[in-house]
Image (cartoon, rainbow, N blue to C red; front, top):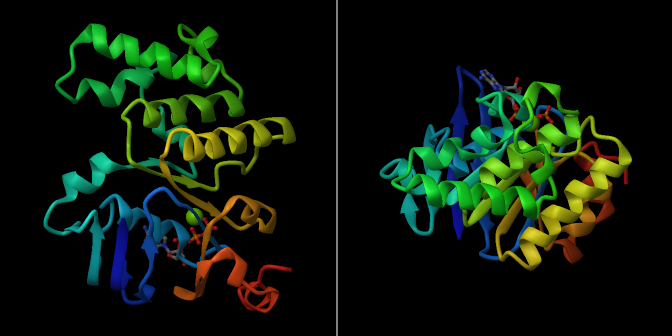
Length: 232
Ligand SMILES: Nc1ncnc2c1ncn2[C@@H]1O[C@H](COP(=O)(O)OP(=O)(O)OP(=O)(O)O)[C@@H](O)[C@H]1O
Ligand SMILES: [Mg+2]
């Protein structure tokens, strides 16, 4: 479980997160929804200790991210909103291997994990290709492969379908759903699209740096979504 306790955060003078108290339950599909600038990415960056609270705390499996950032980083994978920046090497298979190379895993095992991950995402035919030559949808899958290869317990997807066409959108969403249902990976999906709520077990609604709803999707009302500036 990931848990925030009175989490407050500011980059400079202004608080970007105010008193956030939420839980990401193990095995769940939790969707964070809110208008542009409401604080979604900032909140999620606390889950893997990319950011640490100005006040309050964040716990990943009961371990405080301020005391042990490595615990959070190893358990929580992150597919970034600007996922193209996440691709470091120019050849697909090297890129997917990147994170694994920092762990103590032999080269044969790394190759096996990379092959298996590429096959799982049906992009094994791209293994030797140059990342810069790929379409946006393919790049998104390569970024995702790099994260899945690390076998995280939780994965944050920050607006993963923005700029993708309908076909790629459906593919990514069905992969995310499968990771949750079959792979038993806890999913945190960030979105500002109401339609994306259909996959959620739990929903966190953010408005101007504060949580205005947290709970089971069945308890979420249209009034709350309207209040958040999302047209219901
Ligand atoms: N590095 C930074 N330094 C200063 N302020 C920042 C920084 N990153 C974000 N902010 C500010 O924090 C607020 C929340 O940003 P955040 O990126 O968390 O919003 P978001 O809900 O993810 O928005 P979007 O839907 O546009 O991605 C915004 O007002 C933003 O300008
Ligand atoms: Mg964002």
